[in-house]
Length: 346
Ligand code: SF4
Image 1 (spheres, rainbow, N blue to C red):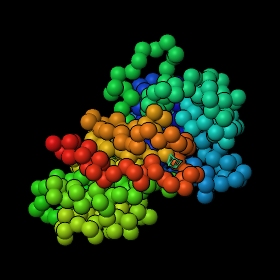
Image 2 (image 1 turned 90 degrees about the vertical axis):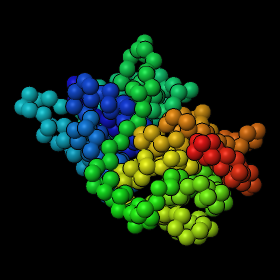
Image 3 (image 1 turned 60 degrees about the vertical axis):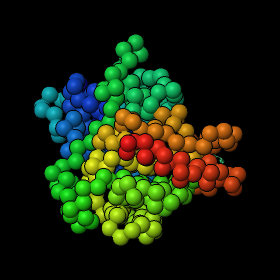
Image 4 (image 1 turned 180 degrees about the vertical axis):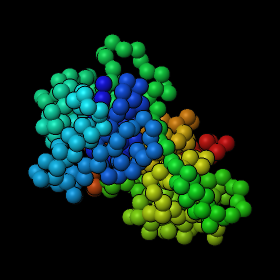
């Protein structure tokens, strides 16, 4: 059996697909069709034979890009098998769009397995129950199983990432530059999100509460760098490091691994922490952990405003609060989040 996992969603979804990939790798070679960012986060994964990039929003946009990608999938499948005429036997649709379903159908992969709720389900040859009540890592893992299978053990559905020696060296260099002799613990903050209403606004106040207990490290993309500087500007000199935009994705995972706690919005960094085993305080605003995207590392906490009738209001989180008041985030106090951090720090 040779499998292609199709996962072209957000970075967090890619990370949560790694238990599915691990399960399939026990049965035969696994390739993954994913975004360039997804390919970067899956680097060094010993369970993946090839990560095939599909830049559906830029280089591979539109019909020509679609056709190119079909051809890339055909070539990847054929060039790595040995003269027997084998090709991918199974496509696992971890991302459920019609476009993805059309792509694997056009690539002539005979078995196409996906959720019974996905938009592309009419093109699947096997539809698997979407277990809305389960964590998404487990839901995706179930794509590889029969409905009657036993419930998974926690380690079977734990995400996993593989930073390289170079990633570890990059983190060593960043930390040495920040504070070569510090033995203080690190609390990592990830204040960014692509969704406006998911960005909790009180990270600066939280950082000032944390600074007496631990050094504060900011992670995120280049877009989060200015916000990181603003957070650290509140702190005594030398008690913070802004790593946003200064390291690659797997180096960020390694940096999070070295943290005693991560505080993040409901976004990709919490899934990096789940893969690296770092206790996480995830701040949920317009979304809720019951959607299946909460933190998985031991001692983690899902924080959110209780008792707001409008919550949750969106599957991902709108850019602006539809009611205008944004109470789900504004009324979640820095004190409450700090208490969770302090409890984890012990
Ligand atoms: S409608 Fe409610 S849950 Fe949605 S963003 Fe506004 S305050 Fe938050």
